[in-house]
Amino acid sequence: MSKMLYGADKEAVWSSKTLAVLDPSLPQRFQHNSHAAMFRALRREAPVHFCPDSPYGPYWSVTRHEDILAVERDHQVFSSENNIIIGDVSPEFDVTRAFATSDPPTHTQERRAVLPSFTRKRLQVLAVGMRQKIRSLLAGLPRDREFDWVEEIASPVTNSMVGELFDLAPEDRSRLPYWCEVLVTTPEPGALVQSWEERQAVVETFRDRLLHLWSDRREDTRRQDVIAALSHSPDTAQMNHNPMRLVGTVALIAGANEAARGALSGSIVAFHQTPGQWSLLEQDRGLIDNAVSEIVRWQSPIIHMRRTTTQETQIGDEVIPEGARVVMWYCSGNRDERVFEDAEDFNILRYNADKHLGYGSGIHRCLGQHVAEMELRLLLEELLDSQMRLELVEPPQRILSNFSANYSKLVVRTVA
Ligand code: HEM
Image 1 (cartoon, helix red, strand yellow):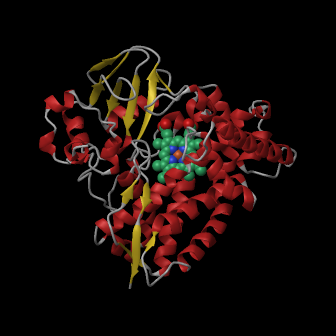
Image 2 (cartoon, helix red, strand yellow; image 1 turned 90 degrees about the vertical axis):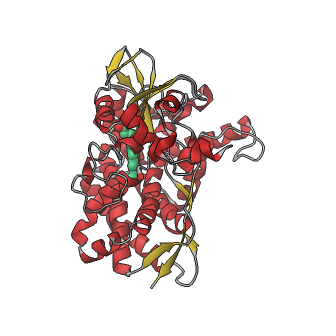
Image 3 (cartoon, rainbow, N blue to C red; image 1 turned 60 degrees about the horizontal axis):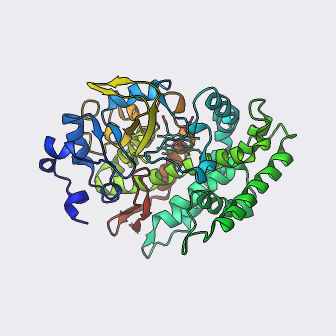
């Protein structure tokens, strides 16, 4: 594939002629981190853009901060039912559905049911163990050789957080990421599972394990983990009769947590690429909360979410028909120059960093925002305490995705 297709991050490439035939979703552009100029041009010239032909079919792109907020806040016209990613989910992956891919009243009931697992008080309790975990991981890092930040820190921290949210025993903690991945894997030679039968057997093991935990925990009202919360809530107490919905809900929360991995890695890239910002933090820890917002704005760990129109509607100057796919590009809204000054820069002093759209908005606003912020805050605090300074040894390796801005490898070393 020509580098021009995805590698050219130059304003000049994007004329109104090229924008007219543009498919903004090309995953390679995100992997190569070369999408900024394209989105700048879209925000300026075609803020609500129609792509008539893509591997996902026709779709609309919404790129300005103001328009994304308008879509987020009108859940009646912009529905989440069935799917919130650009590509349609095929029926064999139906199991991935949960409250994020539902409209009210189902969304309201199921989201409400898990809220006790995410209260401020509960997160304060979880923070104690999480700080210990991060401290011991940092203490164990090699000081004399390069290492992969994703493998040594970002993944163990987020995996451990999920284990705590579901209150899983060690053997389940290590199996959960595998189970969740199998759910979205098409069986083929060389893949995680080779046949549909094998996939089905793994899914059934996952389902049975959750049902076992469910019956163990439903009588114990002191427990506040996600599985217990679902079994206690009158809205979802029957979910064990629809066990694939339970599987989907657990997989949703476990999968969503992976966005924090992108943020934990993105923070290292951001501070490395912007000299002086880490020193600001060293001088004033009062900046940590704003730094956490700025990391999420700058990294935009979730690149897009999609809605489907329930009726003809208008966004900006464009009339959108009923049944259309509408993709909100958070990575673009978070760099909108109408809202953020010098929007491409990482700046922990930014006065309105918390106006970012990284967690979405409206009724589907990220349920794990405070979990993610806690993970980031603890990491920054513990890094400051350790007096460790890190530098990137080679360019970051990003995953091939137009949904998740995550890193596959981030080779770093500590510097004195
Ligand atoms: C920096 C890290 C994170 C980012 C950037 C992020 C981003 C998002 C975004 C953009 C949405 C969709 C919002 C919308 O449609 O308006 C979302 C939804 C969600 N997130 Fe997060 N997320 C993060 C971490 C987490 C964590 C740690 C968890 C759980 C442990 C989590 C759980 C969820 C859930 C359950 C939803 C669905 C909410 C609903 O539909 O009502 N997220 N997140």
